[in-house]
Length: 376
Image 1 (cartoon, rainbow, N blue to C red):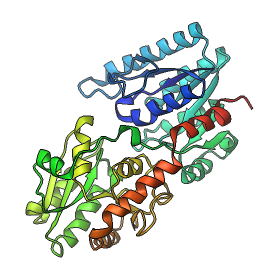
Image 2 (cartoon, rainbow, N blue to C red; image 1 turned 135 degrees about the vertical axis):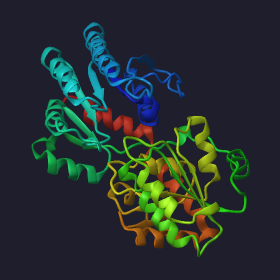
Image 3 (cartoon, rainbow, N blue to C red; image 1 turned 120 degrees about the vertical axis):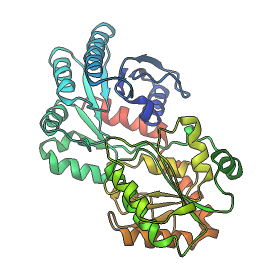
């Protein structure tokens, strides 16, 4: 079985795509990856073709659009010349163009089309996205969703496509976890050794709830002067002004550290290794990859009660739960976590064991081959 697996943003998403490719090959598939300009192989030995510049920061929209078109033309040529059995995509970055090429491929080639859905609709949804996403999903022979809540959301939006869906969760990220000691990490980041560190890490989007976290932290910092909140990550298609206003309105002094920039992969270990607690104050999320990362570092989480989180986070056992968008609820959850400081290490270890047991890539890849790639 020959599989062409396409990921336009592998620089960000490789922790899904690369281990999936490895798992598929272990079960007999021959996988070719079409990706962006990510150069590192990350222990993924399958063939890679680097085409897309979708996630490049210093390229204008016209160049990106031109590149997107030429990349799809190359994909069409590749499918024709090398006779792939499966086309497997993950993103619709420019949905009208995605539909143009996917529909042509389906019309003129005998190939099974499988779509993994990370985001059912883009969080920065354009006026045309619902129309073209519906058409793209209808074109698929099989649709992979990553959480039970996503199955429900997808079915409400596209009830006519329910029979095409299969729930296969995001696998663990343990193969990409590189740790160092807490002491080394804090020295590297110039963080105080004596503080209890709360960490928000990742792209800063409106739905990530960083503004809510800042307001919640402002409520509790006076009770616990030993706390330090670290917010690290780049702003993605959002305005950080509201967060800056909250920071200016509160006397955070030495209780807050912001590192608002793209964090290279080789620095991620320092942030997680330095942290005592990771905080996920999201107001919306489609799937739980961020949980896998936190638990990969054996860190307890304070997360909002979104189904993608609560399928793994149980109150007081593997983390602590707050209501989405509720400043007081998040402040209370942070307090519950801080007040169990002596148990935090064991709570994080439980989370690590949970994802290791339930989210093995080899088993998930076999399910995709058996349930999604197979002609039913």
